[in-house]
Structures are given as structure tokens and as C-alpha cells.
Length: 297
Image (cartoon, rainbow, N blue to C red):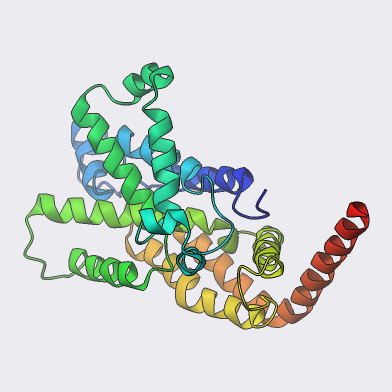
């Protein structure tokens, strides 16, 4: 029933993941005979940090996009902690994300899905690896946890450091993990890096969801107070840096330029028109509340 965190959002994120995976580019292969498929595949594997040659990673990313907001409570983790909800007692951090993963995993483990599990994973080792990939991808969508963000930044700096002393395999694994994290994060906020009207559609839904939480007294602050400024900050400190990292990791080719371009254009459009747009959001949600009140009577 959430205006934003619902199945349509999950579908949108899933399509964005699929699109990004399809745009993992091939390197410019120079001095290699195109007929030599083995050499070409090896270079492609190295260039994408092993992602292009690993179908289990592909499926895990798509699957995590579908499940990442199952049973979303419609409020941030900070609110769940403040409310002392049952979920907050079970999970100490990334509460909504851990709950979504666990619900999906428990369902996948049911006997009725045995054939599906066997189709995804041929061995117990594959199943455990698939589980870890799902955990990592789903947890990556918690971008509000400051401690996790510090760890992610440190991991990025270590992986892409010019003087890294890690073994080649360890460095490849670390880079693959980082690319996977950034891919699912970008997909989760893909609307901010798409056409203006797509951004507005989802931004309004997110505003409506937070306004509903305010009316239900689950949050203290009216989201309309500061929404304009917070969106600018979100672009400046999260969306645009994320789009730049998609470019810096070197895996997505010109597609990363497209994402960055849309993010910057939407940021400018919001700066110019955001206050007017926000006034429209407020009027719309108040009209919806009025109509619901009339129907209730």
C-alpha cells in the first residue's frame, strides 16, 4: 500500500538492474585475433572484474532488485528504532533491508520452490554463494547508515588505489563487490538519473509516503518543510557522486555518461522549479486526504 516502496518500485529497480547489466561494455581489444574467443573472453572477464562471465551474479542482482523492499514499513530505519518495533529488536541495523531479505529467503527455502532452487544453484556451495550475493546486494540499498557508508568509501579507496598491494584475485573480488554495490544502488534511485518526468513521478510518490507517515504521527516533521533543500542535498552528496563512481569504475562505458547527465539536468531543473513542484505535491496530497475524509463519511 506504500505510494513509493511497493511492487512497482521493485519492478522499476529490476528493469534498471537489467539495463545496467546489459551495458557492461567490452574492452577495446587490441592486438588480439577476434577469432580467438578464449583470449577475448579472458579480457572481457578481467575488464568487468569477472561480472560478465558469472551468470549467478547476474541472477542474484536481478533477484535482489525484486526482493529488496519486501514488506517495507513505509518509514526509515531510524523511525523503526525510535518506535521500538519488533523488527528493530530482531535486527540492530539495516532493519527493513534485513527483514526483506529474510522473508524472501525463507520463502525460497520452502519445499514448493525446490525445483527453482535447483535451477538457480547446482550445488550447496552455489546456494551459499547465491545467499551471500543476495545479502550483499540487499544490504547495499541501505544508504542512510553512516557507518556502512564509511566502510564502503574505505573499500572503494582500497580497491582502486594505484599502489594496491593486494593479490590480483583479492583485488578483482573487491572491485567486483564494489561494482555490484554501486550497480544496485544506482538502480534503486534510477528515477533520479532518468528523464525529468520519471524523476517527478517517483519523487512525488516518495513525498506522499513520507507525508502519510507524518499524518500518522510516525514522524514529527512535516516533509514539506525542507523537501526542496533536501532534494538538492541528495543530488549533491549522493546521486551525482554515485553517477560519477559508475563512470570511474570503468565498467559501464558511455552509459555512465548518460546517467550522470540526467542526474545533473534533474538537479538543475529541481533547483529552478522545485519550489513550484513542491507546492503542487502539497496541494495534491491535501486534496487526496480531503477526498478520503469525504468517502469515510
